[in-house]
Each structure stands twice: as C-alpha cells, then as structure tokens.
Length: 111
Length: 113
Image (cartoon, rainbow over all chains, first blue to last red; front, side, top):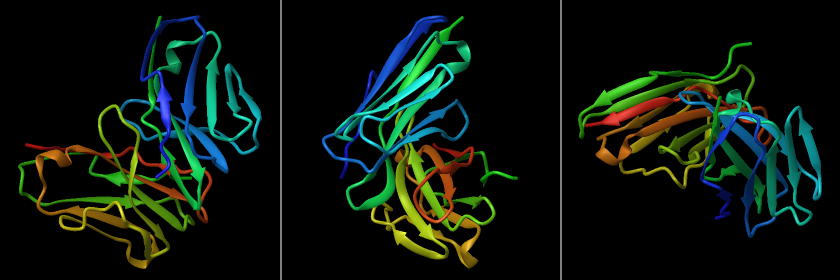
C-alpha cells in the first residue's frame, strides 16, 4: 500500500497570505495529481505532474514534483477566499494505476 | 457535456436497513470507480470497473457491500445491512481508458442512525 502523507492537515489564513502544502511518500510515483474539493462537491483535478523536478503553474498556484518522484508541494500566492477547500494529492504508480489519495489539507481563507 | 451523476445526494436510514446508490458516468468513459470518503479524509477506493468487469474490489467489504455495472455504463452500489460506521460520502468517478484524470460526481452522503 502506498501511503501519502499530507501536511498540514488544517490551515486557516487571511486573504492575501501565501501558503504551501506538502504531499510526501516513501514510494516512487509515475505521476501525481492534485485535486481540490469544495464542501458538498466531488474532487476536481487541478494538475498532474509526471516528471521528477517538474514545476507547473496555474495562475496563483505552483505545483512541484520532487526530483525522486516521492513528494510534491503546492504553493498558493496571495490566497483568496475562493481558494477555500480540501486539497488532495493522489499518486499513481508501484504497479497500480489507480490513484491513491492522501488525507488532504483543509484550507480556509478568511476575507 | 454532462458530468458524473449520482443519486441520491443524501440518504438517512436506520441501522440494519438496506441502501443503494446509483452512478451514471460520463459518456464514453470505460473505467468507473466507487470511493468512500469519511469526514475530513481523502477518498478510499472500494471498487473499480473496466467496462462491466470488476477488476479491483479488494477493499470492498463483501459481507455487506455489493456493486454491479450492467452493460458497462451505469453502476449501483448496495449496502445490506447498513451499520453505523457506514456513515460517509460515497463518491463515484469515471475516467477514459484507465489512469489519468478522474471525474467525480457530487457524492451520496449516507447517515446511518
């Protein structure tokens, strides 16, 4: 079983602040996905990273895949209340192509 | 294009009662997943279908849970009898030809009293 550890578990910040959430594992992944889930909704894919060291930017969100493809980070610049939600990382690899999810980071951005 | 549709959105039942959830995936998506999500946690896979074949059901508690995907399109997940610990959100997702982006439905929230 590939275990994905996400940190922090909870984050409560003010609008305009920057933040970083982490996704770590002892396993190597062929790809790693980040999803955002809003209350009462299903997760929605934000990005997929596949190459070690890869950096992808999506407006104010920056995603990085570790060189060894075991970890990833999500950095949000100048957070807005609309960024509020549960951020989930999901790894694919180890002989299985079923995404395995971490427990998520619950983010609240206060106006 | 319509997304993944699930019903019911909410269900409240007493323990030992049966319950069923229905999922209609995105048209053309061969792979269908049922996930269980407890409050404040990530989704956990229950079962995966490739067309009408269940190819990964190792995490499905088969003593009380069952699923089917007739004709490789819609799917139903059933719990009989339900227990208090089954209270959770049941998410259905689909994808085109295996890995890649999962498209999730809004989920079915089950409360067992």
